[in-house]
Length: 227
Image: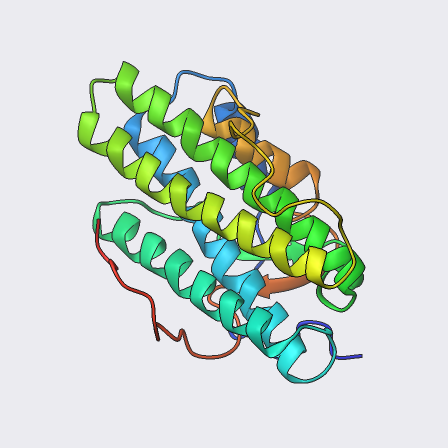
């Protein structure tokens, strides 16, 4: 079974250490600095790029039953996440880790697991950037607050897109754009990182994947690559 085949592009790269996971948990709920916020954000973007790369590869190999249109949407979403990653790095962000884990192989091989998981992750990313925007305002960083909203809005577009394909595949029912207000799940960005850890995507016991994952980043059709 080709679970994330080829994702471990950096052979021998160590996984996240216990001290790194402890540091992430300490930041959750604490009064976060700008550096701490963007470091967590760029870590989440690295995870998104990596996980989407594995899902796309599995879909192209026939191991994840996605339509061509859905694959195209994921390719574009991955390019957007990479653009977020690159801008944050250029702004001084440093990933807390570039090694992640997939807790359940079905996440990237079974659409009935893949779509709901991806929707939940997008909702977590939206909530993280909502919390970041609030924190940046408190810190007097208006431009960074605007950036957080710009990225969070794109994550919301991804959520709606994934819901569309999940409904089309019969995994979900309802309408893709089903909320009037996005969920404010976190009071700090650190809480979002802790949630990823609790779900087993950071420091978990599943299959290790390393940034950027398999395949080239394809920016075809994606514009506004800078805020």
